[in-house]
Length: 79
Image (tube, rainbow, N blue to C red; front, side, top):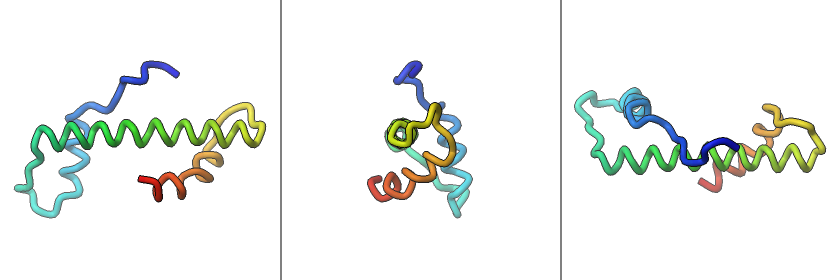
């Protein structure tokens, strides 16, 4: 794995959040944005790790969408 500390740009996360707000005047504090960015980073990392473990259990040479689809339901329940 490359740099585990790499994450999503805060500007991207902010734009994604604002796309789903009903009121265009809704604001996100810096702390909330930082927390959401970290949560998203952890979620994606956990999804990748679980998909790798699933691929190893299936003796697959590489991770495919199939493995991600198999681990996604439990991942969503865990988060």
